[in-house]
Image 1 (tube, helix red, strand yellow):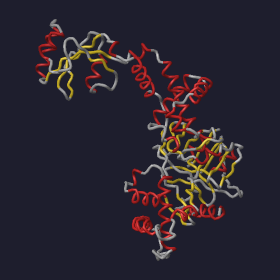
Image 2 (cartoon, rainbow, N blue to C red):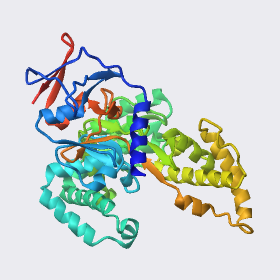
Image 3 (cartoon, one colour):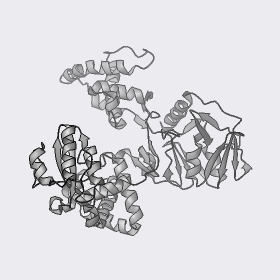
Image 4 (cartoon, rainbow, N blue to C red):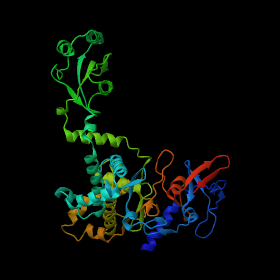
Length: 467
């Protein structure tokens, strides 16, 4: 069966549109002309598709002295060091900077950009030994709820422990006085009339007492002469916040500040630390530090290249999602886990196969696969089968369990054990391609992964690569 699956894999890869080769693209490596060849020694041409220049993977790997191999079982190409088996089968979701996040981490993290900023910040401030030591402590002392969620899943456990170790170390390193410096205490006088606001400013400049004017003019019920507002970034309306942070202590705004609520004359007062929870201040300061981290490029991975084989029939990813959306009654756009959708497709196929076997369906030669038709038939047959099971030997699960079912992974390229997630100039994912048995990857992705740099000489149409 594996030979059949591999044959289908190769066949499906060649069914797509083959890019037009661009024979007039040249390649130089350190000033020397480079002519890429495949495993048979035949010259293979680079090509341009949708603005991305693709180079052959094998030739580029061998150009820097690395062994290149193809894993047909996992549809993966390895340049140099071979990755761990679990890394090969994991599906990427997003590349942030040089860090790949995977599908299996989606149940752990709701914001991959935040996680990436925490990890990068910690790696800049602490040694690997510090992080690993804290990771070990976290793994050894999981609370029961976390242990229940990820017990037995070493990949998830390691991801969780790495992130929490970095969070804990960073929180412990925050200076509380620096955290307090992010907060402001202020009073204000709010009115609804611009002319009145100008009048109040004039009175303050003439020496009138700010607190007395609060009692006389203010329309904000939360502000009295004896109260203050203490806040940090993002907690007040933008115009109010921006004006308050620009003031020095005991200074007031010389011009009224207009917001959606009215006109404000704001006075910054000495920080009331008793209004600030210390733990909250530290967390907010760390959040601000994370916002400043330069994450580099962010490439979100799409899944259009995936498809499935169920008892010899090839399903595209769109067909899988269409069936899932009809069976589950949800929008296709809401489906995020292809594996769950795949399970529904297998059930649908099992129902339909059993229906044909017992004569309920007679459209074996119906022709081109129609996902909506298949799902619709499934919905009609489900109730029929449930009623038949009580009196006849009709067991959908037996059919389900006997079926060959497999999602074939996207083509992946690894360099020294690390997955390449290539993106175009707009950081849109650009999947590696298999064209007539030669695997291609966008030039910048493969060149940078191999530790080189690349430029484009438009006059000579040359990819200029420097080791």
